[in-house]
Length: 542
Ligand code: TNX
Image (cartoon, rainbow, N blue to C red; front, side, top):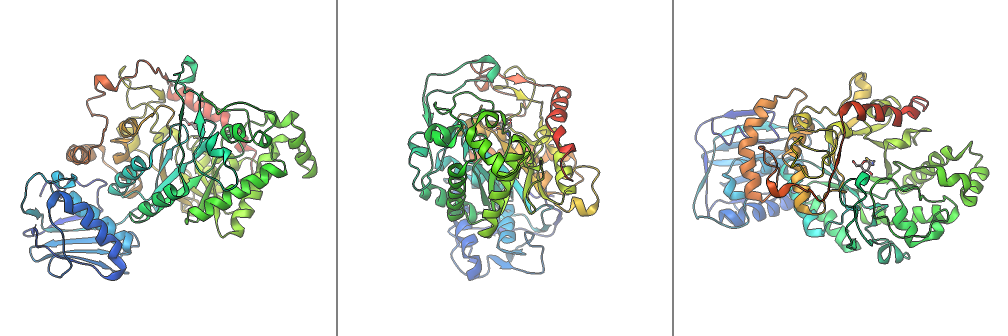
């Protein structure tokens, strides 16, 4: 079989080789109905520069069609000497068929400029394909390190190339606030900037002496949303509340419990959280309103992770709220708050999306849970009736180290090799079929404490994200050896796309960060820590 036909990543469900191929040249026409105009524009834009083929409108070449008989995001791609048919169950399905088509051409055609003129032959055959899960996500933390718009758009292209369809944008954290909110100018004039940045894991207490910051204008975010939508990716925004809020409190101290200080420079969890009085609640609802205006998707992220309750014990404003709402103690305050956010979003026809900490005290009905603290919370959330996005740190945290090579940059977390990621299953063991049906899919998370640039994000993300794509697109049964063979060819595609992936042979000398030491953990220690961290879920309603 043609090598390209058998090296597609993520692997298609069914591939048949048949007869001669189709020659693609300057005259090849593209036939697309009006409802597939956007796919056609994208395909011309991605194939044109390197092939020199403008794909003018017309019949007898590549034909795009929606066929409602196919699975929603599925496609059938047929290549014969007389033409190429890409049929999809929806525009998204046609788009994925076209992405597969790109992988069937030599990698040089993925470049942004032409190496040589000529003709390319698409191998003859038929591919039938459809994803296993509807949520094939990546979370990008743009709070710890700001990522310029152009780099975000480039990452979106790389996600789409791997048939991923959700970009969860972590827009705020203790270390930076990255979006504008009407009437709150200090969020960006103050909250988007920190005086210095920690270098390496927090145990080493090292800092650079350089300010860092940046934020997205409303138009920046609209551009990101539209660019992603044209690639069938939904952007799910997250503003993390009521903890991980030090940047906002630095800008507006009245939202906090007496903290008056700068945006946080160190990693870890700030104890400076929202006071949850009337002004802080109004602030949060206004932020959600703005997110609803900018992001058309159903889900709006409210974070909810790692919120220490200690400041609430002595805070008059938090205590007044606890009394007026008749809450049993500071620990109940977060659940009360999350319920108010859920009501507000529901009134706008949206749904709340939060980290699994919001399960403590019972998450609002209809909330979608991003289950990250090992595999326990995904099962807990599914049993409690919630829709779940599986993203256990022990399988899909791409900030965690890829090997124990001493040159691995800032090694943190547990060892998470390419094979470990490839073995991930979004559905945790022990669920009934009904509960398993609540697992929407999986998500790989890119926390950027130790990724200061797009170059470093590439290094941490690839090639593990190629393996991740197989876990959410492909079938439950997977063969790592077969994947590795396909990956060898696929890496030549990443080369053509200019991705700074980690070489399979290990880090290059210049990848090392001796100036930014890490803090590697063993799986055993991490599992013990996770058991302790999630012990409160045993009391939570399931
Ligand atoms: C935990 S995962 C966090 C993040 C850190 C990450 C580092 C989650 C909801 N919270 O704030 O960046 O660990 O791996």
